[in-house]
Length: 91
Image 1 (cartoon, helix red, strand yellow):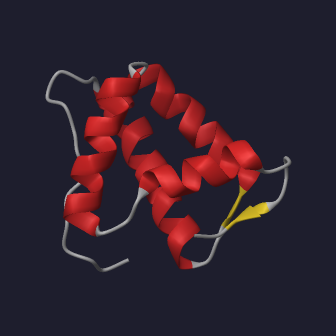
Image 2: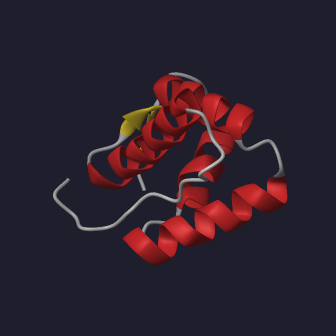
């Protein structure tokens, strides 16, 4: 995507944690663009949750991402939780 927005990144995260969060948001973008395999999305979301275990912090980060990108990460996560494994998530 050639969109001009930034990812919500915490300066206290390690480089690996930043990569995990960015890869999760790239997966959200894929879900909005062309769809993404639920297994791949779940792996990225699980890594994101290791970095951001708090539900309150997740909501804040999702809100910041939506304000920046216009994409609602929660919609993709909700689809993941409602679907069977190994299907395509498309928002």
